[in-house]
Each structure stands twice: as structure tokens, then as C-alpha cells.
Length: 272
Image (cartoon, rainbow, N blue to C red):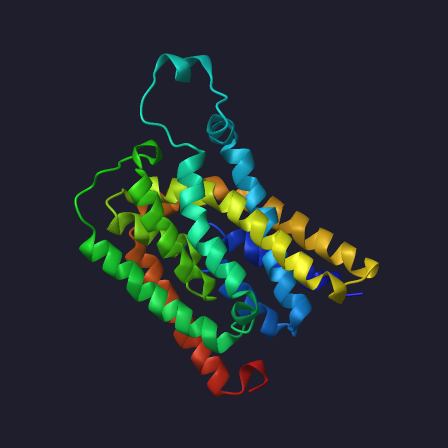
């Protein structure tokens, strides 16, 4: 059976980083290599437990999730206006889901520290460009996002299939380049994460189920629960943080982390 303490560590890392534009997958890969948790099982685990953190979004956004299915409060029915709907979400998730389906086996080959460093750097540059070049704001809230903007954000999300790039970093930056506020893009990003991470987890488990035995179930359960609890405690604060802070600050963190990883590798870290 896999060691449960490793599941706890990876679960904490996932819960703390899922909602920040710093790449939760990249952080899990780096930490996984540091604690000798690598291989196909580790790669699948790192994808699967992200669903635990994503469920915290369901808890936080439960009213918005219900609204997508036409279930509204009395106040919302009295104040009609532009509302985000399921078609926005579908348009936003299809590009990355299609690319992820077609390139699944190649994407899993990228789960290594070297590729994470590349993703951290290029993703950081992309986020700085979004802060410097973002056009006039057309969507101030998530409900103002158009189908065209949803498609642009969805296309940007494809960049996050490269570990280290960051799904939230790519989509928030993409939203800003499409004319949304940072907050609107962040809200749409977190809501869009629910179906795409559920699909990614289900597909990866289906492709890799033969690698696991019943003895591995406690390991997955612990990682899932830890990531959910940690994310639930952190999500409200982090969503506000992402909405208010410029992406440039997160880019600087990514560059520093990439430099530290390169130094660590140069002195023999990760078994190089």
C-alpha cells in the first residue's frame, strides 16, 4: 500500500495551490519528486485529488451552480439581467477537454520537474503580458461574460495542459486579454473548473485503473479528503486574493520558484 503520509502532504499542497495562478499540478509534481512519489500512480493521483479541492468550489458557489440549471432565488427572478448559463461553461471547457482527450498520453509524459520549470516561466510571462496589454473592460462581473469571451478563455485554458502553466493563471490572463476584469475571469475560472476537473479525473482513472488495487483506495481517500478540507479553509481568502492582486505578483513568485528548482537540480536534487 502506498504511504499515507505522502497522500497527506500532496493533499495539502493541492488544497493550498489550486486556487492560485501558480500551478497546483506543478507544485505537486515538484513536491512529489522531493518525497520520492513519482511514476504513473503518482501522476494519476495528482490529477484525481484535484477534484477534492474543486468540490470546495461547489460548496462556495452552490447558488451559482444551481442558477446554471435554472434554479434561482426569488430576488434573482425579480432582477433579470445578463446571466452566465451552461452554454458559457460548455464553450469554455470544450477546447481543453478536446485537446486533453487527444493528447492524454503525451500530456502525462510532461509530468516532470524540468517541464514544470518551463511552464512556470512561460506562464508567468503570459500573465505579465495580460496585465500590461489587457484591453478596455467589457465584462465587469462573471454574468457579463459573452460567449465570445468564454471561447477565448477556453482556448487560453489549453495552455494549462502543460504542467506548471496553471489553469487559473491561463484562464484569468486569457479573460483579461478578452476584456474581462480580473475578478470576473477568476469567478468564471473557478466555476468552469468543476466540470473540467471532474471529466479529467474520471477519464484519467478510467485509463489508469489497472495500475491500482483495493489497497490503494485509502491512499486516494486520504489525499482527496485532505485536499478538500484544506481548499475549503483557503478558498474564500484565495479567491479574493486572486481577484485583487495583479497577476504580476504571482509571476514573480513563479520565477523565483523556477530559479530555486533549477538550483536544486544543479546541486543534485531530484536524483539528477
